[in-house]
Structure formats: C-alpha cells, structure tokens
Length: 295
Image (tube, rainbow, N blue to C red):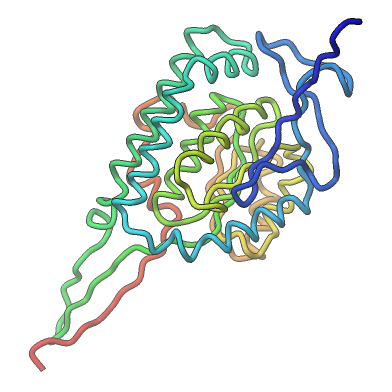
C-alpha cells in the first residue's frame, strides 16, 4: 500500500500562537518553482483569515502594547537583531519559498533574503537612537524648559504587497514595532508562505506574544475591516488606486493615519532609500512637556 502524503496547512500567527482560521477556510498556496496548486487537497494550503481572526489579532496586539511600548530601546534592538539572525539561519529555505511564490530566479530570491536580514539589523540599530534624533528641546520666552519627545501610537495595521513580499512586509512592520507600536499584518495573498515563515522567525526571536500578528487571506475581504476597526490607530497599506480612496475614507471616520503605496508602484523595497529613521517617525506621536526652572 502506497504512502499518503500529508499536505501542510500553513497557519497564522495571532497572539503568539499558530492558529487556523476560526472559519476553517483555506486557499491554495503557490508551490516551489512558482507553480500554483489547484483544488482543495492538491498541495499546501494557507489559512483564509476572516474578520473574526482580524479582531482576535487586534485584541492580542492591543493587549501587548502596554508592555512593548515601555520597553527600553536597547532591548527592542536586541530582539530585532535576533529576528535578523533567525532569518539568516534559514536563508536557503526562505529563498526557496520566495522563488516559488514569486516565480523568479534563485539569485533574486537570495538577494531578497539578504536584504531582509539587513533590514532587520538596520532597524535594530535605530532602536535606542531614534528618540534622540526625532526629539527636540524647544526655545521658549520664559523660565521654562520645553521638550518634545516621541511616543508610540498603538496598534498599526499593515497590508503587504506582492512585490518582493518578504522584504516589503518587513519594511512595513519593523519601523512600527521598533517605535514601540504593535502590528497586525496581512500578507499578500500571492505569497502567503512568506508570512508563515516570518511568523516562525518572530516566534523564536523573543518578541512578546501579540507584538507582531500575521494573517493570511484575501485583501478584498479584510481591507475594509482594517480601515474601519477603531482599535487600529494607523494603516500602512499597498493597494490599487481605485481601492485606496475608500480605505482612506473609512480610516478617516475611525480617525487613523494612513500611509498608502500603490500596487505595482510601491517602493523599491530592496533600495537603500526604503529604510530610514523617518519610516519610524510615521507612526509616532509627539508629546511636548513644559518644566519650570529658575522659579
């Protein structure tokens, strides 16, 4: 009797645990070499996240925010650096997954994995420095000190694009978490395995449960929920132009800030310009404090 292959269902990372969708739905994940699997049992499956899964992820991120936001920058930097180490240690596996989902060359996949490691190390280096760069001491006419200091915003929603899916998703997530925010991210449906592998790296990188939550599913179904959810305080999303306007209107009603990149014209994630301390600044609030002196 021949052996029956056990096909894998790639799970989502919510609240530090790997879970299936509460709906039980799945969709076909691309196979190695860029070949699409077809049929319910044809090959690896990714969970098709629902609005309920999104709500669970936001609750986990909100719960994790208080502890993560008060961690010192040096400790956050250590954790981000550890993430880079975990990606580096599985570089060959990541490159194979990227080659499969994007259908590109092995050389291009290896370049993207190397760029992802460098991106993690870059933001790890800023973790205990961005506050000094972005804060200020303000001149005032009176016997006062006046300081402006950055503070995290809260839960940030990320909707990734299919262009360089690993480095792109990291380039959206890491600036938010290094600033003390927590994140709920939706991986591009064209490359769901990217998020699953990233979740496995996050789980062994000392991130507290709920700081980074990774969903797989369909943009069309989940984007409206990202835009309207009142506990999500900011959005960084890659969407077509015709979809972006509706998202921004929904986000305005929930009073959240947005960063939009157009599908197909989003940033070149592998370029040096894709990493900057000002990417950290996008989802920070600034508090000004007055302190009397000479009185």
